Length: 124
Image (cartoon, rainbow, N blue to C red; front, side):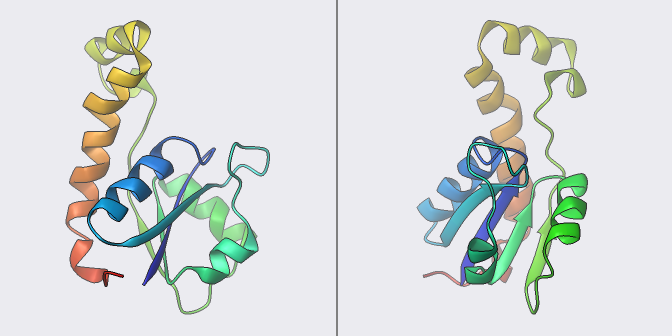
């Protein structure tokens, strides 16, 4: 089963989650919904995927406007990466170290939310 993880730019949340899934033995790739992003999604990537994971509802909505995935399950997570959406502590940490903010708040939330879906995936 080939999994495609989609975030906004294709450089942070989707990349992290795809790497996390690969470490667990899954075949995963990543991309961003923004056509001008770092790693923009393509029809080819969508076509190769058996399952799509979006990291926010608005990203799923944009994805479905651009692509018509046939016979593909879409899993939507709700993982924000804006420190203001977490707490003052998160904002302070992000100002001090963006990567530490990501590790403490964003990546841990991605892991937490994907865990309940892992039973749906077939490993390589």
